[in-house]
Length: 269
Image (cartoon, rainbow, N blue to C red):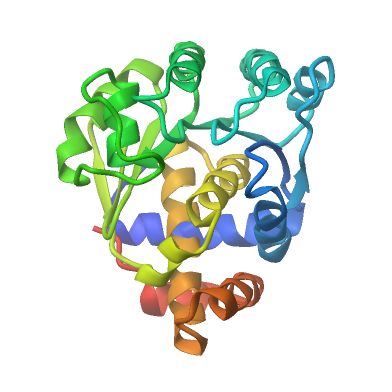
């Protein structure tokens, strides 16, 4: 498949329409702080969220879902078991799945779990620069959920992780980077107020799971989800740049964003 910006834009437009037409069933094992916002983001874009994080159910559901997100923002004992079951089942069923290694590096329980999940071959890994470096065992992590490294600092780690998994790695920053280990795509949309909304990054991981289900490969899925989400964030910020009202405006923008908006706004290099 061609990786030129024009082809990636076309693939992003097609993916947006496919998520909406299929109501991509997106299985989320995610942290308690962001469950509601993540579900609303998926509903707004036209996907169908399912927050199934109970052991003995998570594996079963991952086998029938369109895509799966495993987010390590809160790692209860039950969620740890459910995450392993779901990742294994997704691999067996061919369900694309996203690993979001939230705040790993300095916190031992989630770091060990992240390494175990990494070795099961996620389709997409999504995180900030410090999280990606920690997952590649090339850094000690950031300050909690905040990165202390730049996207360019994490590029080599992202490429190494992508080559090892055979999937894609997405590094979030002012300019987002997505790589499959060889190709590097830079996405320059979004707005700073997105960082002031709890769950802003976590919800992007769920969108990646939804989009990976309707795209031919992981890199395209990660690029498409990121482009749609960050273009919607720009539209929302034009309506309100204050965090509370922006969060509502983002849901509205996701429900309304069109292929024409992507043509006019998406910056893919």
